[in-house]
Length: 269
Image 1 (tube, helix red, strand yellow):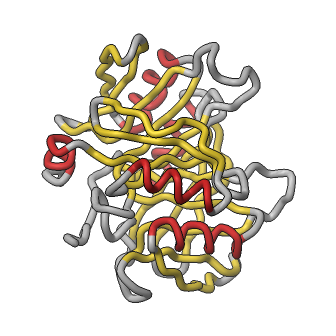
Image 2 (tube, rainbow, N blue to C red):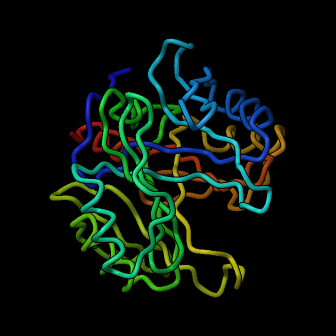
């Protein structure tokens, strides 16, 4: 598997699970994606679990931490690369967003911050030092896409355009409108409108997609492992996908890319 050595600014670079039950989550994802894991002790932050691919010494694909407050919702957070953490946080706040966690150094790996957009969807910022982000991307069992679900897409387009310099390209998609966020010529994220089919109180959120070789088999295996399938395997233009909540309630998606999408994804810098 080709390993990633760096990410351009504005690109998704990491996914992190916040869970109320670290052991249950580790068991689920290691069984579902054939991940391994090791525990990293971060001074002043406690233990942090690193998921790896291809063995303990393999490239990191995602992280996990235990929720500090039982009232918090289990969730996956998507992190985006930045060259200037403070400037990006300032831009988010200037556009109506909120800083949730101030700039924090994570050992010698890099620096991070957590923000929320005006609709409450949280996202992370990452300024790398010794960890560029996920060591592998756009490969089986690794992250291949991130997607925002929100109710005001125009506001989201303005916000992320100012914060990351993204350009939105809309396309008609199964009787709805889907937006690709682009950096230059490359699509780096997607956005779906939360319409009347969504529960009325469900919050705006980011969700990572992980590449799998067989979407149907993975969804079936996830259900066996205790996940709830929210969107059954469905054909879309990029391939075949499914959405689920894991055994702790965190929302996650899987995608089996079609051959054309697979080839295009692997051309990305």
